[in-house]
Length: 292
Image (cartoon, rainbow, N blue to C red; front, side, top):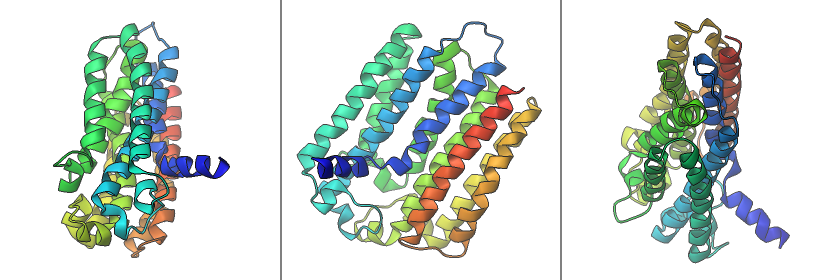
């Protein structure tokens, strides 16, 4: 039983969870920039649950879809449940829909207390999460995975968190969502850089495969540059947002490793470091916004 639980935890890929936590942190902080006097803080908790459940659901969905396609046969990274034979495809598919179900239940509560338009956004999130690697023509195999991550784990998650708390949209929240989205994309960029060889064999045309190894490394660095620019844009009206740049300093280490040619298993550690950067930037940017 203990071994089985451990396998499910590994399959949920906890190292990717910063991508679900960061937008909620930043979205909550952005509420302090609004003149709205009505803040529903309980919705922040619901938003965090939804975000985490969606991240886990997407991870299981990718595990299932890549596993049944045989994409994971030449995998270098962390163990996949279906590809390794640790769990059956059917079991992982059920886990996927259970996680989606959790997100749906708490998302429904958010919609009931804010706007029913939240339901439409939720449906789009579910469809995007499943068809990333699922279906006949998964867009993740066409090099569009970063687009999905930027939109849903960046813009939608960050601005959505602020909206469900006080029903406001602000330009500062948008730029904050760009910061979060770029760092979430950096996690995927490292993952895809590591898997270029296996994905090429499996005909999985990720952005890293399309750009080539050199281009993929440059793209990884560019994401941090854009995140830094977005922080500076926020600082035009909220000077203390520059605290976010302190968190970006931590990106120097993973950037150096990628630029110097880290490959294969080495990039697993870079993935961990990138996740830490995302959390640090979320925290420092949030502090900067809160002390405004």
